[in-house]
Amino acid sequence: MMTENREQSPSYKRVLLKVSGEALMGNGPSGVDPVMVDMVAADIAEVVASGVEVCLVVGGGNIFRGLAAAAKGMDRAQGDYAGMLATVINALMLQNALEKRGMETRVMTAIQMASIAEPYIRRRAVRHMEKGRVVIFAAGTGNPFFTTDTAAALRANEMECDALFKGTQVDGVYSADPRRNPDAQRYDQLTYLEVLARDLNVMDAAAISLARENRLPIVVFNMHAPGSFSAVMRGEGRFTRIIEAD
Image 1 (cartoon, rainbow, N blue to C red):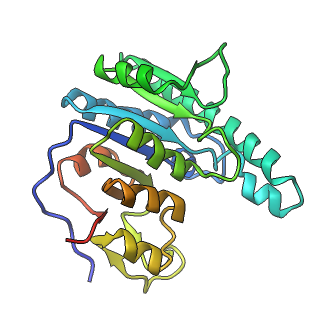
Image 2 (spheres, rainbow, N blue to C red):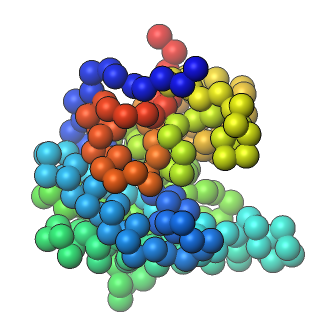
C-alpha cells in the first residue's frame, strides 16, 4: 500500500541535489524543456532562501548516453566523454535559469573548460558554498565508466553534505518501473544493502556503496512536481529514504 511520508524533517545545512538529464526533458522525448529548467531553478531557489547550502550534479541522458552509444558499437570511453559534455550543456542551462532569479552560481567541471566554467577544486567549491553560491558540478567524475550517480555520491561526500537528494521521474524507489508495471511496490525507506541485494534500479552499485561507506542518506523523489524539492526538504510529500540499518 502506498503511503505518504509524514515524518519530522531532518535539519539540513548542506545538501547535494542530483538532477537527472531526463528530469530536464519535461514531457518531451529528448532535449531540454526551458519550462522544466525554470521550474527546477525556482525550487532550488526556495531551498536556498530557507538557509540551506545547495550544490548540484546534473546528468546528460536527455542529450547523449555513452552506454547506449557503446551498445551500438561506439567505443565506450569515447561515448562516456561525449556524455560528460552533455552534462555541461545541462549545467549551463541550469546556471542561466538560477541567475535569472538573482542567485549566485558557479559551474565547476571535472574536465577543464576554462572559457565557460571553473575546474573542479574541492576547497574552492566548499568556499563557494560557504558564500551562499549554488555550485553545479558537471562532466561527472571526469573519468569514463563512471556514472553521474557515482559523481553525485562522490561530490556529496567531498562537500560533506548532510544528504544526497535524487530527483527522478517517479516519487521514490519501486520494485520495478511503475510506468510499465502498475503492480510495482513502492518503498518509503530502504537500507543500502536492501537496494543492492534486490538490484533496485535507482542508482548504480558504485554510488550506493560509496554512500553506504560514508553513511550518506539518499532521498529519492519526483522532480516533475512544482516545489517538490523544497517540500521533501521539509519532510513532506512522497519520497524514499535510503539509509544505514539501525
